[in-house]
Image (cartoon, rainbow, N blue to C red; front, side, top):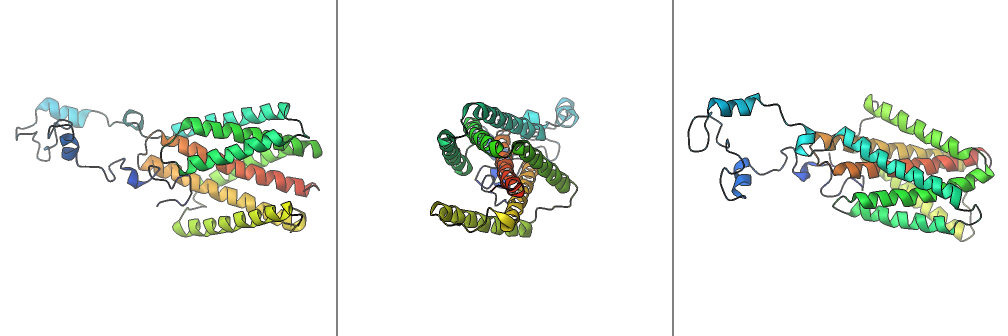
Amino acid sequence: MRSRNPVFSREGSFTRDNQYAGFGAQPAGQQAQAYGHPYAENPYADNAYGRQAGGQPLTDQQLAEMYGAPAAGPARTGRMTLDDVVARTSMTLLTLVAAAAAAWFVVPVDNFALAGVAAFAAMVIGLVISFKRSVNPALILTYAGLEGFFLGALSKAFNSLLPGIAVQAVLGTTAVFAATLIAYKSGRIRVTPRYTRIGISIAMGFVILMFVNLVATLLGADFGFRSGPLGIVVGIVGIALGAFFLTLDFNEVEEGIRYGAPEREAWRAAFGLTLSLVWIYLEMLRLIAILRGDD
């Protein structure tokens, strides 16, 4: 199934179109001809009846090489593994946390301009990564650093008004991630086409609603979407959508490994997971602020 997640739906990501693991690949003979010889890359291309190129029977040594050697694993063939995804995601999140810590100690609470610039730059780079066909680890780590700087400054501002809220938001985000992963791995959540369509439709409506609310707030109006009982409902919906995005991420990682996506695609998975976690953290921060009496 091809995902509607904008991060993973680009050409060259975790799909059969990627021509890995035998899906859409050329036959062995055609691949060899590309190198100037019909059997240059595959000396056993005509081994369907136990013969090599030219009709000669395969020798005992050739048969031993074909059937006795261990199968090549993902590491030998350059395919993505779960360990690759975990390692790249850890690097991305560590970069984000380090930048957040730097902002926490450097950015004054009453001067949010630098953090605002970082947030805008992170948004632009995030869009470039999402719609870029090739994977660029440097861009992904740059995004993580800028996003982390913004989150660190924002968390410090919230924490100055509501002490301890940053730690609460981190714990809440961790709990949502763990609960979503357990529900997904246990089969309680299944990423089906219908599930994806409904979730994406709700997410689009949510984003449009928040954009309208932002514009109204800048113009001096207040629809109450981020305060009071309505704000609590909106916050819960926002966190639920973040969990929905995580399930899409988990599914795409599984499909990438299953279809033999190249190792570099682990960076795309790390970027998608980071985006989802940032979304959940922001919504968690706002929801806790409302519950504690400040919006």
